[in-house]
Structure formats: structure tokens, C-alpha cells
Image (cartoon, rainbow over all chains, first blue to last red; front, side, top):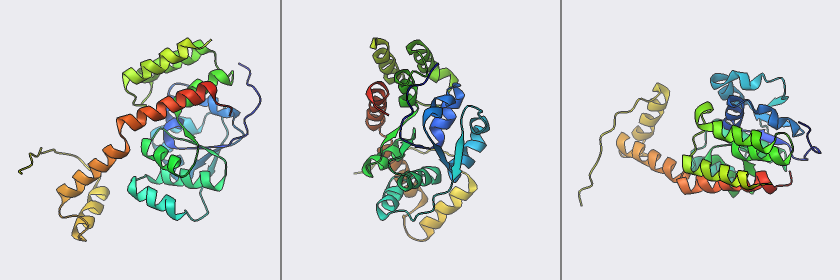
Length: 172
Length: 68
């Protein structure tokens, strides 16, 4: 399916969306971002749990290590929210590449991003965005959303997923 | 007031257990149980269901109506 004009944002990926999108064969949805950055710690985590996500021919992934010192606000948030090394590096990479978008399915990482004024979304957002970006039809995205409980390790309350599906169904 | 407690058996990676014990030995927590309870409390606070749901709804709106 054709893609619309390329978005300006680059994305920095935490492990969750890479793993979850690969599990439902939708990792190619990240391919229309100009750059997809994966910090070293996330790379190692995905390599351990879902190596196929790093070898998808439809996606060019840049493996990077953050080099700038982390701002004190991020250091504090990391301690308070007990962020993992992957989330910590992902947030640092986002801050090094403004205005990058953070992709994470971790609530604490997303909370930290919000506190730092960083735009962050997760697997669900990327799937639904595929309709707007004309990467998938509405029916294809609905099918992907319905497959999440059985085909992926993304943990989502069933009633919430059903509410999301109903909202997507309402779209023209 | 006497607080009711539940006994839980958990398996931890050895490195994590070692770090946790060192933390207690250094005096940052009164004992291992307190440390585990505090860690669990913080996790549940930062991963609250309400917060997670709000992020998913935000994803829905961005997916449908965002411009990037």
C-alpha cells in the first residue's frame, strides 16, 4: 500500500514496540520515518528476546549509543521511576536528536518522556497511524489490533483494547 | 495497628538479589522485605492502570488525528 509524504520526525525505539510490531508482522510500519534509532541497550534486549526484529529487510535500524551527558532532570526521573537501561538510553537519544519521537510501551518511560516534554507513543499508536499514513487499510489495522492478545506479548486490558477497536471501527 | 502481611515466594536473578542485599546492608532499607515492598509499590505507582490507559487513548487520538 502506498505511503503518503514522509514525516519529518525521526524515532527512537525502546524494545517494546520493536518486539510487539515484529510479533504481528507489522514492523514495516516504522519504515516511513526518516530515521529509526535504537540505542545499544535496547538493541541487546531485542537481540535476546526477539532477534528477528533486528533483521527485518523492510526496516533500516541505526544502532547508536548516546554520547551526551544526561541532564539532571532525566537522572532524577530515571531513579524515581526505576527506568531500565534501555529506556534510559532511549530517552537520552531522543534528547540528542530533537524533536525525535520516542516509541515505547512502558508506562514509566512514557511518564518520564512526558515530564521532559518529549513526544512519546507506543505500538497501538503506530498501528492506528498506519491508516492515516495509508500504510494499511482500516480493516487490516483492525485485524492487527484484534490479533494482539494471541499473537503478541503486549499486555493490554481487554476492555481497553475493545474500546480502541470500536473507535477505529467508527472511522470512515 | 497490626498490618496483615502476605508471604510471597519469588525467584530473582542472582545479580539482582546481590544488589538488593548490598542496598540493605548499606543501610538504605531496614530489611530485604521492606526493599521488595517498596520496589513493588513504586512499580505499581509508575505503571498505574489509569496512567497506562490514558497513554493508550492518547495513542488512539494521535494515530487517528496526528500530523506526523
